[in-house]
Image (cartoon, rainbow, N blue to C red; front, side, top):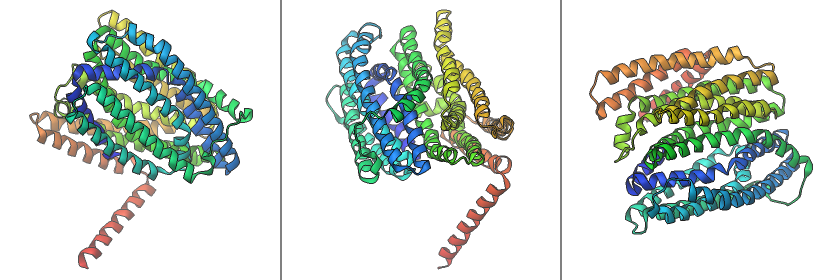
Amino acid sequence: MLLTMGVSLYTSRIVLATLGVGDFGIYGVVGGVISIFSFLNSSMSGATSRFLTFALGKGDRDEAQRTFSAALTIHILIALFILILAETVGLWFLENKLVIPPERMSVARFVYQLSIISTIINITQVPYNATIIAHERMNVYAYVEILNTCLKLGIVYLLVIGHWDKLLLYAVLTLVVSIFIRVIYRSYCNKQFEESKYKFEWNKKLIYPMLSFSGWDLYGNLSVIARTQGVNMLLNIFFGTLFNAANSVAVQVQSAVLSFASNIITAVRPQIIKNYATQNYQYMIKLALTTSKYIYLLLLILALPLILEMNFVLNIWLKNVPPYAVSFCRWTLIFIFFSTQSNILVSTINATGNNKRPSLINGTLYLSVIPVSYLAFKWGATPEIPYICNILFVFIGMMSNAYTLKLHISQFSIKDFVFKVLCICFFITVISFGVSFYVKQSMQESFWRFAMVVCTSTVSTSLLTYFVAMDKNTKNKIRGKVSNFIIANKMIWKS
């Protein structure tokens, strides 16, 4: 995860510098049009993961195989539907509504078609990824993503030395790498898991419950995509492609940091679902609360130095920093803290199969960002407004999710979530931020100040986590591992 995140940030810098702010913004906004049509896939992805993991949790291999086949059938139909939408409504929107320089429109059309192909491939890949996650083969992701990271470095190298149109070359190479990685995942699943052998059948007993689950999830996922891409479109309409470039930088930062958090949630989610399937509710709740707390603190170590030193980091990372990129990135990182907490609660609720309430409430909150931002822009507000709204609404949604979880699982305690997770995390954040901010203010901007802020925030957060956030059993385990490590190194040194 750390390697992928580091390479992602580095390649984004080179891509922005090579493409230029204008083409970088075009790539982001054109790809965003296709993302809008992926709402059906997002909904079915959650349903596939939940039902497949639940079947494996019960130990029913036959049901798992039927679930996989049903899921892949649905995803093929979704891919065909999105293809039709993209080639009609999406193409019209690209030609008539987006603000793209006329001399780059032909290139934008080509990039758009490549984005459609990539989207179709990714949609039909979902059941295979869900199978790997359900079996908890996280090492496979590690190996394949390291390969993916190396290939992305190769894209950057070819982009720099290539003599084609840079935007076209980048789009083609990105698609080729995406196809290659998907082939690897599918080949692995077909060899390792019997249930990943596709058999076409319209199994109503499986397909209809999955469609019902995804139907309730549809509104929430559509709202997330509409919020994300709607903000991008509003920035394009009111401020132009330069601000799309700034938004793309923020999205790159968000993707890099969220990939760290999402992979942890991905690793934990199968255990949450499997413990629900075996009715081990107490351990499921403990796992959810523990994950919420520690994922926040891990993100704090990662994000706090970036928030404080975002201007320095972006000037080092990017040769040309787009307007408002620093501000967009800071607000985005703050949003991630509450977003991950909310996602863990939603994952726990989804294990029960009762996803109607969180989808409706969260979806409405997400969608409300668009009209609020539109009105604010009409009245002359600054471009940061959508990011601030995101933070406010996702916090409200998070607390609503906690209440919903209590309704479905009586053993869950909102009080424990507030005092044992949120309050502890808030206390550690305030202290670590205060100490790190003091260090920042006492030095001039430089690499050494950045290094000192990183060290200060890491040490303060780690110490506070040990003394404030960890329970007695966890502290004993850590002390035991540290003692074993010291003893082992002493033996090596003596030998």
